[in-house]
Length: 349
Ligand code: FE
Image (cartoon, rainbow, N blue to C red):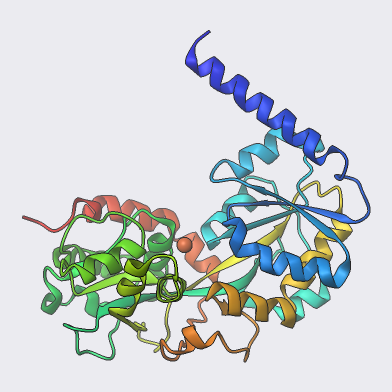
């Protein structure tokens, strides 16, 4: 037997084990089955609150890849009721691969602003995160910055970032294309590349680490990581990285900052559809929005609801109102641009 066969056989057993796991509950009245790319600890608080309010139990399957393929392979028998994930790209991918269904629910539509949900009801943004600038407290005295200025030669050799092909950056570049058009965005990206301190690598947190190490002065990263680092009682180094930076909210010409979402979608088959709908309604509710804000350092999508104290300390976020579907449409163009510009090769020598 080849290794490949052994692997696919192992995957088969895993799928069987899962079917058995859900078998007792898949059609039970009081359960909702969730497939997620999100770290279990990030969604558990809000799921616990859901169970406390509705009495509906949650079964969570955490996957780090292949969520859509899994649901497609399970076909009609898929126990998945609700999909939870981050990033508009992953939500639109789930829709495009045909593993979601439309939901037109008055409560959900009233709770969630239109720019953060699919116009056809296939996915819903339930929290926001902003893609901002981490700036060295020691070395950067600027208190404001624009996205355009990331290409200003004054930052030459001073910027760190993760791969340009990561979902978070592709969404930012997709937003830039929507605001500036492709030509201006490509010129800007060349300037950004020229300003890099090193080849893009690692996640967002390692960019804060690189600032602490003096490798760069500013970096591009998501807001919630700063909250997670600053409150990390288990890792004093992370705390130092988080406390070594200020958050600057870069803006486009409209004065607003790029945001992305974490969201939920009703799965195509949803054996417990009614419970799935109840979960999505709950995620959009004031109570769930509060839990998300306090525990995850994300921004509520509910208009007017404040983030946690830790997040408030970053300063005021003014979220871009560009519909996320516009950003998702530009994903492919953004990805091709990153390759053309050679952004991931790092600064020119
Ligand atoms: Fe993340």
